[in-house]
Length: 526
Image 1 (spheres, rainbow, N blue to C red):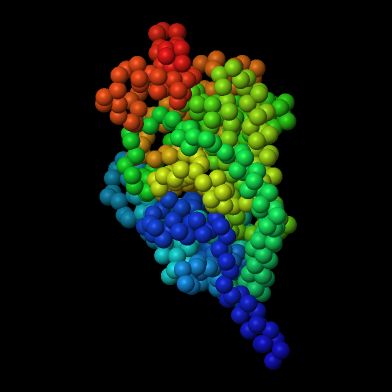
Image 2 (spheres, rainbow, N blue to C red; image 1 turned 90 degrees about the vertical axis):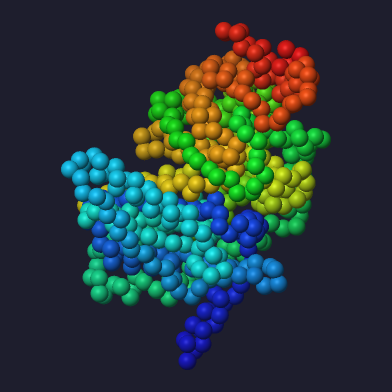
């Protein structure tokens, strides 16, 4: 029949290969180089307290795959060229696990601690389990029963099909589908909610249209103009100057995969509200103000007046893109030139203008920018920057799964670091800010990052109160400790005067000597 022929034609169209975006290609090649790595595993855990309908949850998850083609994506190569294709229907299911039983104890606190440790170990194993992108869906869901009225759903996706924006979309749709299923007759609604061919077909078509629109947006003329802008913005006569002198504790081991850890800190609401007011006065966003403050902190650590930070942009500017899950992020490089006499407000203005220019030139992929700029490459580092600053969405689900079921979103550390240092900034329901510093443990000690976090939160408090103060004037006592720290390079046969001269050239404004309240920079000492 005509209907059957139309259905077959639609399914054939869905199965046609889709080229990978430049960002996806980068992740594909990274996976090929190290398929065991969990560095690009995007994950989250939903803790359910209350009565959970497991059948409804599984049905909702299956339906979620039909509504979001990214969850039905498969990857392969032809003649060395990777591509992706969309499966006709979702085959995703939730794996069920019971938390390993713990020994009975009369101490409730001890039992709870033991359960928490067992759960943490289980989640860590789940997030670090590798994906085979050529043989399985790049998404896994596991429901862990901790107790009769407590469950934890762990979701892990490969970054090649998802980003932080996508996680928010998936959580919102997932909770809605769960509520719909719970409110309906289970037997009558299972076929409607799961494996809905109409939804699957429509969502696949929308995904393809978005990919085509993104490709059409970057015309050869537009790409050429934007690459010219990036060449000028990132031009450098000395590639070594682009390396940020972070307070490393050890020299790099030379391996690509970096074990990672996370340190969390919170900025109180009173400070955040003051920063918002400062941002408004400078016609900037809160993120621009925070980025400027972190830029100033790195200047104070390094003494360098050429600082480059990676900033991921959501890539959701096209019509309809905000409602499609997938990996659409593109990273831009923000290059600033802070100095000690610059005022905090001036640096905010400078960062605002540079970030707006980067927004205007964000269509060209980061990989193309790297190829155009041609920096000196280090296989153990991301080119053009070592530090990334990211503004995360707040996923506050609360009672979104229905009455009588409280849901808390919990992050799970994947144990690896994509960059030397990454700062994630997330707003909380109470107007505070949650900061997460992810760092490479092969080059940083935990104590170093803890000091850096305290310095940053201390700087933010002063920053909001004195925007007209010089960057060099803010009191950051713990940076004094960094002045006498051992540098990663070895200077076995150099005279002390030669070492001082080298540091004065590389980072003239960094603190070299501290005597009580007196400080001497390397430039002054030289």
